[in-house]
Length: 478
Image (cartoon, rainbow, N blue to C red):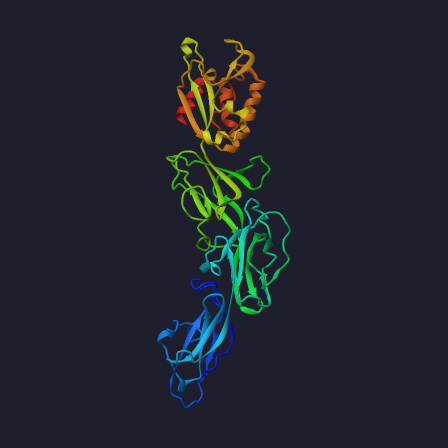
């Protein structure tokens, strides 16, 4: 009779899972000649738990039910892939003999590791992605399910390998101590769940191997990602301000809205920087920036166009559907100072009045301390005693700053947020302790000119006697 060798095969757990060990070499099976060698009959092979191929790689399975082996052309080597798990059998018989056969057992082994969120076909490329919890502490550990199958009582160990400088492995989803190794006897192993935690940017391979069949191994590539920053690209007048929360993961940037004649209007580009550096195409769909205009994973934009108006946009980054913990807020702000003058009527002894106004859009207004927000309106300086040309001054706000006057000359200027933030405390100080009012030396027009100068808007020379009449004319002609 023809001879078969008892063999062990690295296979999959079920016939539908034959891609489990795509890199495992096929196992050769030698079909030997039936004696006497001069016999010219035919032999037939039947397999359970395995699939036969003509070649060590590639090709399609042999249709054994319709394939016969001429005895005078033996010996011949074919190649087996496991298709199932546990014990199988190879039976080589004389075709049509109804039982004249030689049988050999097939031991079929399998080792399977599954990282949550990673499809079987993606395990080696692109693999799985997890966040570095050294920075992104709110991102949970990722479950790793370990399985193995084979004949009962088989010897050897199951071994999990990893790079401990990139990931830690735990037995629990939270808490506990990191494992230094994971080795368990094959016999009696019924599967377990471990938990993977990224500790540093980089890549490692989770290698799940059966020691007695080293080609029975399941590899999962794991990339550990750290989101370094979320911040706008450098551009004119972009400024970062302290949000005051003491948390380096939350940041605020401000940039002015485009001026009316600005062309082209450059948008704000916000970029997420990650380590290790990967292209957008290398990141899964659920690893992406959130916020702003666009769908790109690592860059988004904000319009600065006047037609879009002022805005507040928050940017975060999701790591596999979980927030990274980083948040960057960008304000496109509109800040202005307005200067106004009513020229009055000198013939009727009406000296007129001058005043100023600070304005800031509703979004950026929240960046101003509460006690300074009342000064984001009209501000005027008056004598504390009506009609008195030389007395204590009185700073008034809103309608009181203007009185019954209507501007005959006015102009509004865009200003920087930082200048406004420095000016408001000065205005409050003058409100708390008003300067002395003197019609000839320091009057409402001098005060209004000063409202512009403390935000770097320089208008009429305030030396000499400043009058609303002259200031109105200046505002209309400059």
